Amino acid sequence: MGYRRIASTMQDWIRNGVVRPGDRLPTELDLSDRFNVSRVTVRRALDLLENDALVKRSRKRGTFIAKDAVLPPVVSPLSQHARQIGELSKGVSSRYLGSASVAADKMVAEGLDLSESDSVREIQFLRLVNQEPLAYVVIRLPPGIADLISFPKPEAAFPLVRMLTSRGVKAARVKRAIGAQNADLSLAEHLNIEPGAAVVRVTSIESDAEQHPFKYTTSYFRADIYEYDIEFIEDSDEYRRTP
Image 1 (cartoon, rainbow, N blue to C red):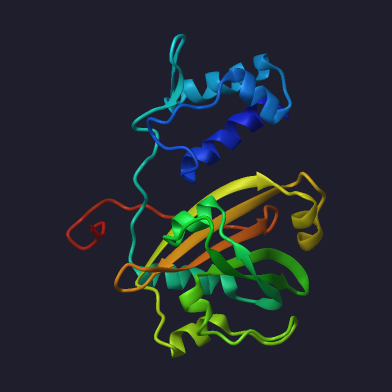
Image 2 (tube, rainbow, N blue to C red):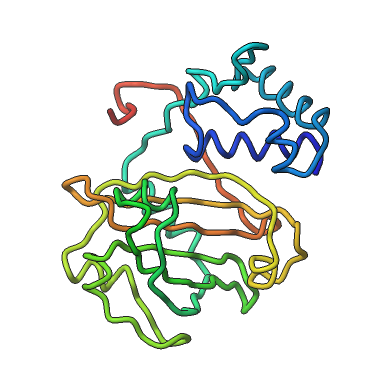
């Protein structure tokens, strides 16, 4: 693994909250063991992060995530989120792969306001364009929400959003993060790509009107197909950022 890829991985740690501003990173030796590279390679990766003002280094104390390393998220109306999802869904079909109860990992537990020992219902879908895989989607529901859903057998129709809406569960807020990673063997098989190929990772956390998170979705898109357009315009009285 090259130093640029290591730097990119650690940037993902920052964006996804694995490490937070003020946290101390593992030592160069620990990082070199984790990534199976030399300390020189790790040091070059940290140099990149330091040049981007994402970390601060001290010979005596170690390497820390800069206090201003995380930018505030872009905020836009929920209707725009729905419109963008609609555009991305044109010509796309879904294949339900199955579901199971699994233990929540650190990121999912934090996103759904659970403990890591809590179980969640994990649901897997494949998004297809002309029967070719576009995205592998993993949805996690906390127990109270999962109990509202009847889970069919794999390959059956499963209109999850419609089911949730009919039971009064509707998103009032959606937090989305976009990153990238290399496909492991499982992702490569689902997306019909080579192991190690780049995939676009989109994580969404949906909350209800009381700000209770009820749905954690991770979508892995083939990088050669995924496209997401964002346009920024000058602030005015007609268009203001939502507080």
